[in-house]
Every structure is written in structure tokens, then in C-alpha cells.
Image 1: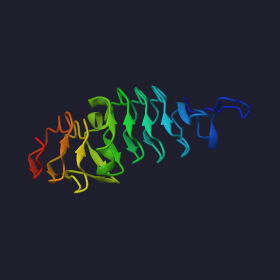
Image 2: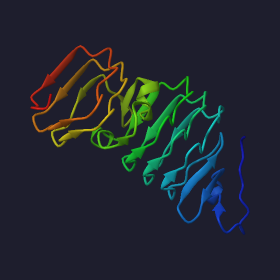
Image 3: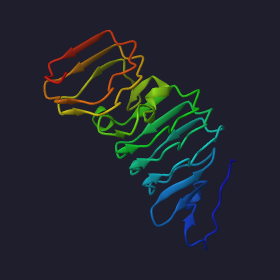
Image 4: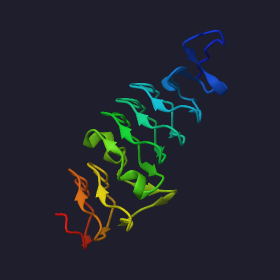
Length: 196
């Protein structure tokens, strides 16, 4: 599907800004998209299965302002090669990128925002499929956790296979469940943190 239009008089849904999507007006939740959707800045949630099987989609930039990404939201988007997650996203549901077999780039706004995301499972993180971590357009091979970070969340770097090294500062007090699991290329961990 390449085009979606909601008529103006619909009281429940809209397709604002000619975005090629269906948005639940009262909650600003994008409930259905297509290959050529441009997510409006006013959207705050991406609903469950919103882009399910949009196999013609090659990249998706989630705009600043989106707070949650629902389960299976991009499932079956087999042509998807890159996804960009803004700092406003705080939670990502189950299996959002299942079947995204060509996903090679998972980009986040910052390390600080990445480690604060509530990934409900290991496969909630796009890194579990993409393996390549990008921050603000740059691939990260030698990861340095910023000094201001005190908590590395569950699954934060899960399956980031191309990380060579990780440096963890002393002020990190908590390292979440499987935060670095699957980082098979990791050769060096430099840590002054007391957390195990």
C-alpha cells in the first residue's frame, strides 16, 4: 500500500499534513501507515502493527515528540534498512522489527537517550536486528558511556555485534539485564564502575 487518505469530516481519525497514514486524533496515535508515510511531528505514539508488512519501506525516521513505539509496529518491513529513534522515545514494545531482514542501521539521538529507553524485551531494540549502532549519524565502534549516565537500561546495546570496546565511567551504578549480550565483536571493556 502506497497511499492513505482520511476524509476531513471523520471525527475519530485523520491523515494530517498529507502524511499517508491514519492517526487517531484524540491520542495522536499513528495506527496505520504505508510505504510512503511521513510521520508528523504531532504524533506521540506509534500503534501496534502500524506499519506491519510495509515491505516497500526502506527507511523510517521517527520524529522528536514520539514517546512510544508499539509491538510489531514495523514487523515484516523486509525492505527496511535503517531506523532513526529520537530522544523523546521512552518505550518500545515487543518485536517491532521482526522480519526486517535487511535492517543494518539503528540510529539513536544520543547514548543518554538510548540507555533510558524501556525495551520490554531483547528484540524490542532495533540493534537486535541491525547490529550496527549509530549515534547522530556516526557509527559507534568504540563506545564511551558519558559521565552523566548512572543507569544503563535493560537490553540497551543488545546484539550490537560491531562494538570493539566499551568504556564505562565510575558514576554508572546499574547495568541492566543483558545490556551487552550478543556484542560478539567486543574485545575490550574499560570500567571504573562498581556495578558488576
